[in-house]
Image (tube, rainbow, N blue to C red; front, top):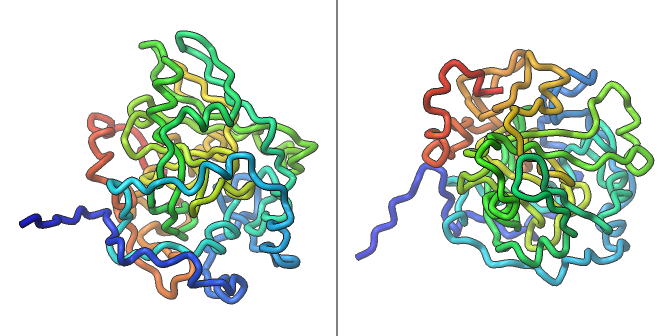
Length: 337
């Protein structure tokens, strides 16, 4: 007799709510406590004042030309990552694809309309730095050669809201192997596009554009580190970071940089976007820890999108079993936030 022993981060398949159950986005958003809102460039990573949506986002998105990679989806769900946490249902698709941040297109939550100006083709990805040979790869060529799969992950924003979503994509480790980094490379620096004419938020000179994030090689090679190229069985929407973004579920959401164009392998630790803006509040590691408050609010609990009540936040967002060993010997580092 086979007995299933649930891990602390797992979510039974029966608890994954069908994406079509919730459709009244505006009514749902009224119940969301967004937390402290950003009042200045250095105020809060990944947060912004909630704006009022104009028109019907669904009809607007339906009018867009199809994504060239649409034929690749849906992809098979990896059973090893099918469960994201006991009693945490899948977040409604309408919420997960509309209540988010993309500072390149505005410092508020409802950036769906503005983000549709993001041109996702042509799109190339550069692998450079301390590698055997620098490479520039067309996004569609990259997608065709990567092992695409679906994973259900929890996502925890630093501003204390959370969601559970099914990402499609491939392990970051597969990209690292493709890049063939030298032994001297200790970090992966990820950089988004820079085009102020396309993305008006990048005209705001007080931000250190382009958006930059980084991981250690060990973090990048961890089984959980994921490059997401789709969501809910479809190509990644522009507002969520098309055509590819990072998903590292044990870290606060601002680490999951969107619309990546460059992966640079380096021996020097990168200075990330929010770290450069306000290093006293946002460090390099940004691991989730309910016992370590943000300098201006508690991180002990979180508000699921579409949920009615707050729930306790878990160490490493519930993924301690998979990632805690990465930080042994780093007790002197500012690992959280």
